[in-house]
Amino acid sequence: MSRHLEVREVLQRIVSSARTLVGAEYAALGVPDDHGGFAQFVVDGVSEAQWRAIGPLPRQHGILFAMLHEQDPTRLDDVRADERFGGWPSAHPDMHAFLGVPIQDGDEILGALFLANPVGRQRFTAHDEELLRILAAHAALALVNARLYERSRELTLVGERARIAHELHDAVSQKLFSLRLTAQAAAALVERDPARARAELAEVSRLAAEAAEELRSVVVELRPAALDEDGLLPTLASQVEVLNRAHSASVVFTHDRVAALPAGQEEAVLRVAQEALHNALRHSGAKAVAVELCSAPGPGGTGRGARLRVTDDGKGFDPDGTRRAGRHLGLVSMRDRAAGVGGSLHIESSPGAGTVVELEVPGG
View (cartoon, helix red, strand yellow):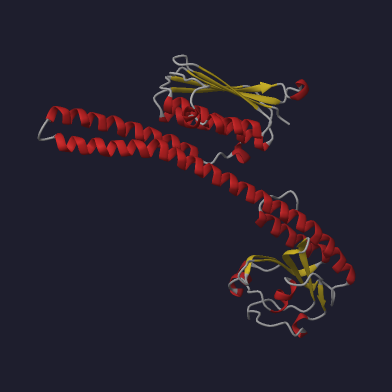
């Protein structure tokens, strides 16, 4: 169960494991919502056709309600004879012997396991109940871990969306605003001063081209990183290739056989590379940008870390300049990413001399 990080996968593994563990014909796991229903309800032993015929997810009622509000297991020889039984759909499979165990994190009930019809037996035993208690304890840990993972991923996505929205506002929105004003000025001058109107229209064309390039850069960043599926090298190579096609500047990528890095470090390398590339292509006026990823000695000289180097021949800037420049170029964001994974970031630049951004991460 602990190998899975997606909540849905964890729930399915829990319910199938419970069914196998005690030899039941049917198993289900319900996770409650805050409105008297179930946020998720997964089953094992029920065919797709049966599940479709059963209909919508059940509400918290009868025996299901009891299981989500009682901390003790429920073991019944015949669930149909219990006073709480009722409201089950007509297409629901016939069930008799029943065993239900809550999945708890401290005093909080995260969900409940429901098993029915032990194969080749008339009833569930105390041993079945004890086995299911142990499974439920492990399931609680796996489920909490999966929830934390998904929450962390959601927060990361929210942060990335906020940053991209900021980029859109700073770059594309301002360009489009200038474009509109210039077009209005050209329209006003058409009759009175055609020569100036033509100059304004040329400016409209230039601003439109810049806005399109800015937008292409942002769209590239919206593409999924695919780090989990492809790894850092193919992902970075693919993004460099896209940027090379989208911009007039030459963008090249070189690398050696870099060892796999921890997931957080791979993401930091990718995001710093994206930020440095976009700064070079968007702000520096560079004609050539080079991205290099190579192995670097980890702690104690183990050689398992990595070094990213992004070099451009653009106009450069003063890294120790104004706070405004720091925000505009994303330097704070890059330094935060480096520090967040135990890495270091170095920036070399001066007006007229291009820029070098170098990130080193320790590996694992």
